[in-house]
Every structure is written in structure tokens, then in C-alpha cells.
Amino acid sequence: MNVSTYVRHSRKVRTAAALLSLAALAACAEQPAKGGGAAPTTRFSENGVTVTLSVSDWHAPKGTLTAVFTPEEKGFHLYSTDLPPTGIEGVGRPTAMDVTGALRADGKLTAAADVRTISVPGVDAPVPVYPDGPVTTTLPIRADGNGEATVLLGYASCSAQEGCTIPVSDRPVHLRITDDGPAFDAH
Image 1 (cartoon, rainbow, N blue to C red):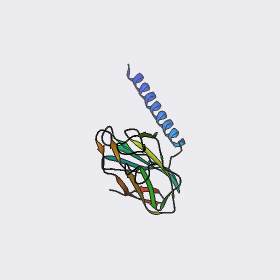
Image 2 (image 1 turned 180 degrees about the vertical axis):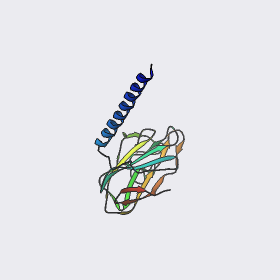
Image 3 (image 1 turned 90 degrees about the horizontal axis):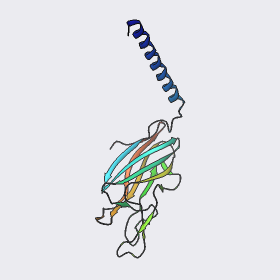
Image 4 (image 1 turned 120 degrees about the horizontal axis):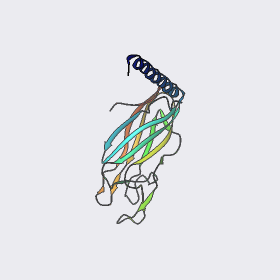
């Protein structure tokens, strides 16, 4: 390839790259923002379960609070959100999420997993649980203005072979609601 052919080829490549970059930027500009940017997220682990919390689809004053409960060991399950607060005959604790302060629930807590029932020795009634592994729950929320808010989480994980972890009740996670949206406090 001679020098003039090389220069023309290089210009074409640079021009094509510039046009491709502009097209990509234009396409991004046409995408509607979902909740104004990246969803605020926080995570903690306690009593054999890692919980990842995020707020998505934030369009002031509403959004969706999502909690993913992930047992840290294989073969462990979580209990249904519909389980009574003290379990069935004292067995189990519900997977729970509630909000206080500047936030309030704007609907019912739902889980993206099918409930199945298990038999527990010494318990007459079937116990509703989710399949082994992670469970994603969502709660529609609404802000009552700017200020401090608290997410209260509850759960317990069990395994048919290894027993249960210590239940967690009303585990607080703090966040602040501002004009810019919700933000979790740094741990």
C-alpha cells in the first residue's frame, strides 16, 4: 500500500469511527432515563443470608424497593412472606420488608418465587417456603417528603439437612430521601 492510499484509508477509518461514536451518543440520548440514573443499592450479610437492597423506577415520590435474599449455603430456603410473624407452631419466620420514616409502603410485598410447602417433624400444619436459593421481593414505596427513612427486614433460612439459622427480625437499613431521590447511608 502506497502512502497516499494509506492516508485516504486512515481518514475513512477515522471518519467512520467518529460517525459511529456520534450515532451511539445520539442513540443513548434517545433512551429514556429509568429513575434518573443508577439505582441506589446497599448490601449486608447476617445469619447466613446476604441481602441486597435497591430502589428502582424512582419517579418522585414513588419507586420500587427490591430486596434479594440469598442464602450463603446451598440447600437453604427462606420462608414465605405470607408466613405468620411467629411462624407455624413456632417454626419459621416470614421473609419481610417494611419501611418507616419518610417512606411508606404503597402496595403489598411480593416475591418472585413460587411457594411450596414442606412438612416439619413435630409440626402438624404444612410450612410455606420458597425453593432453595435466592428470593427476590419487591415493595412499591412512596415518599412523604424529604428526610430519613428506615427499611426493616426479617427472614430466616433453613435446610432439611443442616437445620436453621437464627432468625433476623426488624433489621434496620437507613436511607435518606432528598430532591435528588433516595440514597442509602454508608455502612
